[in-house]
Length: 524
Image (cartoon, rainbow, N blue to C red; front, side, top):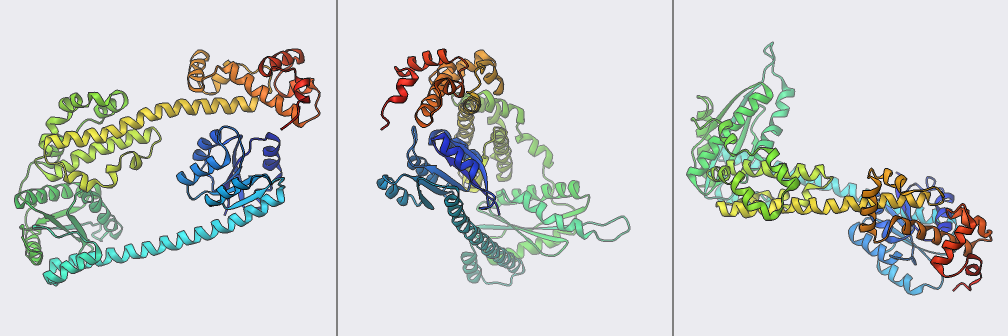
């Protein structure tokens, strides 16, 4: 297996030497990026998601220890290899406390780095095997729990388990079915081909379709009785409300399955019962009802859903351009009336909120965000919905939901600006040796007009494009003057200046010394 490695080293000669001389593939790695310091490296690391970070310990702006600490907190799976000088023992102690994988002393060669990477790869392989074993174990446990839950549900509808035994088993397997009222729905599906033969491939799709319809409804439990028969046990505290929800869900399942599968569907709804052991009585009523006409008439399901459905375009427009301060007015104009209707039924309320949550999630995804991280309510939908029973609590819940999306939108706008600047800086860093490099060319790489790019660059970096380019070139010139024997004219050319005299003028203006005198300064 190939792992990804990212390199951070402020000395360009050392960085290029490591990058170009290490046989990454031989060590089982892919070189995925590099940076001259931790500050520039961090967003690139977050983007490339490497398995291993190799970093120098002493760097300007953000050193290797600071970078390692941030990476350890945000991406704890990343293995860190530290490069350090002999006189940096205190740094070494701090690195060890951070749990670095390898600590290599300079001067370092390609063989030493490859050996270190092979050791790290062995650890990564072992961790991968452990994760796979854990995943398989968790899957086995989950499958076992699912089987036990389905078996218990079948025992409840058949009357084959006592109340005390049922409660004990529920606690053991985490089945939260205990409530004041119970209702059973029996779904009978017949799928046939034109020649009268049974289409078993179609039958295999039906259980998941039903699960998808009921998974967002707290207190509803699903199991399969046979190839053609599915069972739902609904629980609640209000007998009238539970009965209405059962009829609503029965109509919904019947309509959706017939449209999706082109099959014949009958749904029987039993009577509400108060005891666990009486679930079998509700089941008996459902068996009788499933062979009769469709469930007792309720308002047409599509009409009920339409009454609480909000046009996605209205919500999307608010998310794109609205402010949280405008939410109350937006709610009163667009959400309050359908929200009051949704509160009349648990299932209607669920559909109302799920529709809005999905719209917000799609908006966040369109901005390259992770909806599950931005909207925590998505992963705890049941307790979120349970607390909503008045129009006031609905307003506050939606304010919280939309607030997450609006905050992410605002942060993303700032992030996009920062990303543009990083892209521009990368282009400048790769092309600063070109004496003809102009602002227009850099602006074109990030699809901005020169004037707009100039304003954004200055606001985000605190310096003009010209000042930034000059600083990069002078830093390169200083490095070459101190580490090579190049003539000043060659240093000028390697730093992006075609005129040595102009280079000397700019260098003196920025450092206070002409290039040759700067070279003669003692290095500390």
